[in-house]
Picture 1 (cartoon, rainbow, N blue to C red):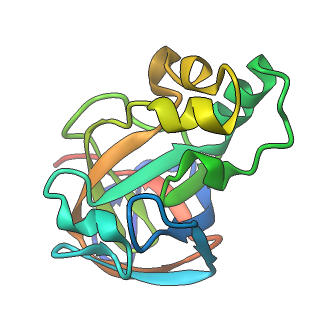
Picture 2 (cartoon, one colour):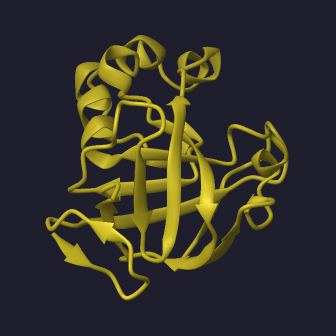
Amino acid sequence: MTLTHTGTKTSTAPGQLCGIARKAAPRATMETLDRVSVSTELGLEGDFRGKLKKRKVTVLALEDWQAACAEINRPDLDWTVRRANLLVSGFALPRETGTRFAVGDLVLEVSGETDPCKRMEEAATGLEHALRPNWRGGVTCRVIKGAEITVSAPVLLVIAD
């Protein structure tokens, strides 16, 4: 175990934040960013989802995305097709509500699975089904501690005291 500079206990093998995206409205085009502020009140700055109490931030694991795309023979699909806010790599997303993890100084708590919807089928035939097993479509999170984050920030599981 290691102690981050914020004093939060975390696991030792960090993953990495490899993408940040937001949308201004439900069907708006995804805008990718290198850095963003995330708050407990609004989630990702400028993202419409922050208005939703339990779904302030959505997180997708690159490895899960790649597995779903491989299943439908579409390795060319960009991760923003999933419409998630954060893309992480080298970190197994927790599959249990209430579990906390840190992205840099940002602390998130899993509030549930991000259920794949018909929009995924519109993007690519079979994608909705390919994202269903084992929470491949990612997790929805509440913001526990806001922070400014940047692409390449470490991603770690937070260990409860």
